[in-house]
Length: 210
Image (cartoon, helix red, strand yellow):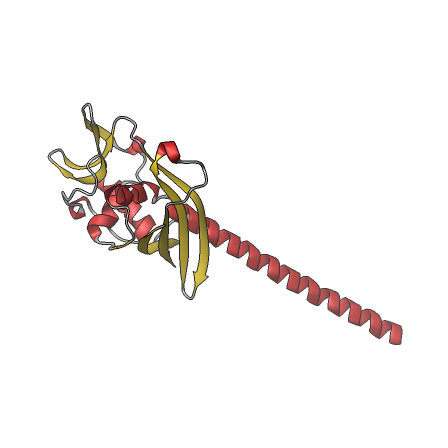
């Protein structure tokens, strides 16, 4: 009788341990999944981050106006979905469609952004998305510059009902980029949103000059 009770206790303990291990595994998989999705989301912001830093390298909180969000969203549109409308010795101008912009806006910010939201304000003369005499266009320089932008690492931390994402980056002269130096932190607030294909959208952004 005692042996039977002993074996029952062992069996019960085995079931409990298995359940706990399964729960822990599921939690770890879920954590890894949301971090992967959020990292994919903020990866889209690489060109937008370089745009802001090329205009102002100082620590700053980025006000996510419709203009700024629409520019950032436009800069995630693939080149093969744009049309080259003008190119000279300095700059190339690309036109993008309203539907592509709206899709990008929904995926990145959960917002219905439109080309009319983008103003003619110049953030950077050679790397921007703004209203021009050729219409609203994505603009980039046609030759290499001395600046280099490199993402060193991206980390995700849960904080209440939001997530804090920190990207450590290098922005500066390419000749002194030793592969390790970090010049800025790009910090995002991210929240869950079913409108995005990533399941999350960006709600806040700031830059810290190191």
